[in-house]
Image (cartoon, rainbow, N blue to C red; front, side, top):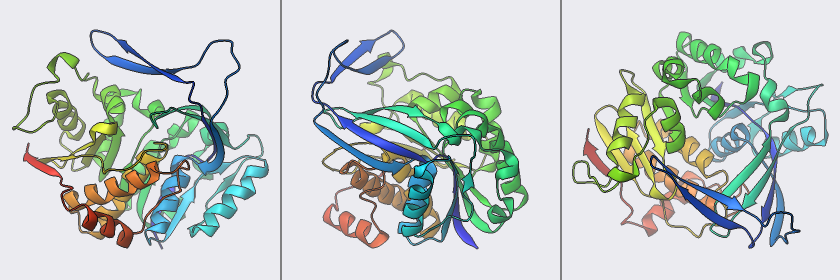
Length: 349
């Protein structure tokens, strides 16, 4: 019996940091975008370089195991040297690798992570075997023997299994947490509503939430307030639209601005936990998986789950690797004792 099974991607992440990179802001009527740029046609020096294992399913499985949960993962690896490296690392982290799928056609996923001087990053991703998970390769017997299924972003044709997994979890009364990827979200709220009706926890960033709901956060209304707290009215609309008539706890992450959560009765506003940011890669995985783990451990205490998730996510940001810096529950508690002023705002919806 597992506590958590994660489903999603596995990659090797190559981190490249260059102080030459510039951050370029482009403003439009409806939105503002930022781009990382390098001198065109030039040879650019890099300030730092490292390699780590990553991918949503690998990151979250490692975190769940580190937090003391019996964990397995369903990922697809290629026919290359990374296959055995990833399996070994997972096993050493306490993750059961019996449900890992081996591909004879594809290479393991690979990412180049460009890190800016601000600590944020742009990822160049080759999905590899991650994009080709078929329904008949998934061990549904293992899923049936798990209390939770955590679905991280799926790419390519792998998204076809999302509905099947959601239906299976509903039929077998298995808790489902979903952090869906862009491929699934592009299908819109009508498609994603099937997942929302089944999941107990749904996590996505602000841009993904906008993609699903078709609600843009308008810069011309950014100074407006809601119930005397600093939350954009368009984000409130997103939260309510995503939850609809379901029972899911909906979480929207917003980078340096923190996190918003809605349980149908209250809206929770959680700031980021203070940290010296080295890289933000993996911070989202750390946040969402810790939130699920803490909600399970502490009987759905949303405020507590948000605090714990914020601390663990901040810890990841102090390292280059997407798994370096994971904290145990006792270590998170110590961090919170050192920052007693760290609070979650709660307002009635």
